[in-house]
Image: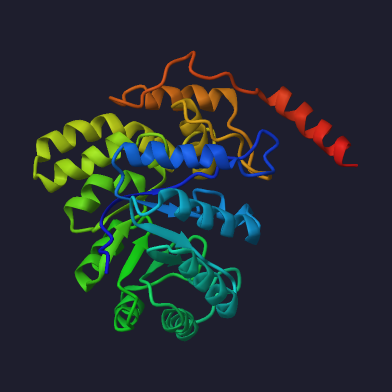
Length: 321
């Protein structure tokens, strides 16, 4: 069985300019670009890929077309999170049938159950598929996975991995100490998480700085820690910006904006997510300017400013009516 390790790109979903349809040509091109940069694996239907705003058909298309185009060049993780256990099992089986290496599942959300319900949810899914499951701890959005709950879940076959996006480094360290294989999902923790024993990163920033992300991991594997910190000083500004900024730009739209600024055309975010306004793009461009490979310049991309965005929204609404 494939061991999941290294830098896994939580892929953006490229949309057409209307924000409606998926641009599969760009999607395939983006896969090639990330693989050429040396990423160790790809996450299809990631949260960074605007999972919450995709239809079920679109999610399955991303998985099916992604696996087909990757064609065994790297391991793949498909997110199959759903509200109910039965729906999640159906999505998990469909992803398995498509040929993914593993699936990633958040605990139940919106109306989260008790610990007993969370354990039931994961155990039922684990019994329904034969491939590994990456549990996804993101307490801001779903039932949190505590250290004790994680220990109980590790006793279930197929539940060997977890992605921790809690933003609590102490919690991350507890997961590592408890066992299993822990992926970190917080950009600003990257070098510290990897040096603390994480198996890798499931990382949205891979969409715009794949070479830097891979190099950081490789330098840590080679124990070249001074070079690690030298590189991290160049990567840290944009990672910190994505984690919180004065313009209140959310992570998903920030990643997509950064990918566009790096020359990787991802199209707009899907509504209700707004485009990144000009002042925020200016700050993001400055944060990215230190990157050794995927830096950006002022003339890299022409953006639609807010008034144009407002007009576009109005025109789109009129056309639909």
